[in-house]
Length: 391
Image 1 (spheres, rainbow, N blue to C red):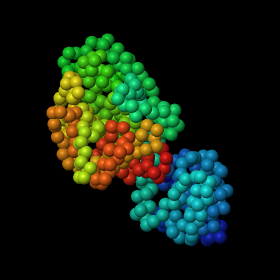
Image 2 (cartoon, rainbow, N blue to C red):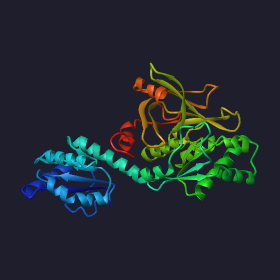
Image 3 (cartoon, rainbow, N blue to C red):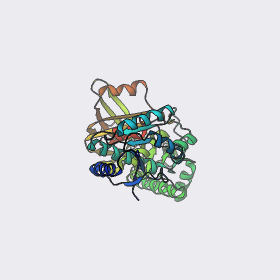
């Protein structure tokens, strides 16, 4: 099944043969895979991406006739494709103006063929991510750590907005399973036992990811979840630290968009003048690093912490707030990895492209944890969670 469907609006005043020729030439120039549905809107809203190709002027009334059906079938923004011929753009502007008056959202996709093709490709990718998030089950294993005083979420609201189910799981379930098996006194073997127990818990509760109140393990089983989280993230099971649910939601989004969960870390130092920041944490997905080594967990000095060395180059820093109303999305460059003894084990020096963007961390941050992913993904993330459309 094609993921892109194109529906058409055409005035009867225009020559059908001439319009068909223009349509074939225009759509062919975009080099996209699509299903041309014509003026049959009966399956509108069932594809990954639905485009309404306004082929001519004089089609505003035709759109108005279809609008009740379109609203009933989908609540997504209306995407109006134009060729720039036969007053296509003018009609699209009138339609979009009407939609805005009705408090409905939409966009005119117009420009040269390269721009239109890139725009459609981005919209298709983002739409697939939204589909992937639907009915995703994420576990909160233990409550958020006591110090995360700004990082709580409304589970029902997240379900309505993103389609994500947040499931509370007592951490005692994990601890009991570890104690039942008998914890190894060897740090690495004990860390592997935690990995095995967490993976079994994920299977029992049918989870796609979770966040763990990991510091409770320090006293309960005298080990850490750092290695387990690093491995599970590399296997595609999104695994966050400290019971931080907004960080978990951010990681699930980056996983769906980029294929990696991202490095959940907190800033340790900031230079507002140069835009250089030091991020650190004791775990990182193993599929994000060129190499890694074991150390102890920083704060406790016990268990197994991960010191990962990520490839230097472009990165994106991302965070969504627990109420889904705010985001931070900035690009920069990982200029070096380091290994200072008095910090969490994985340490990254990142220089933001825009040094002024460091002001956010010092004036209105979204909690302390932020997610770092390789590559430049600002445009994709902004389309998904930014100002263009609401989550």
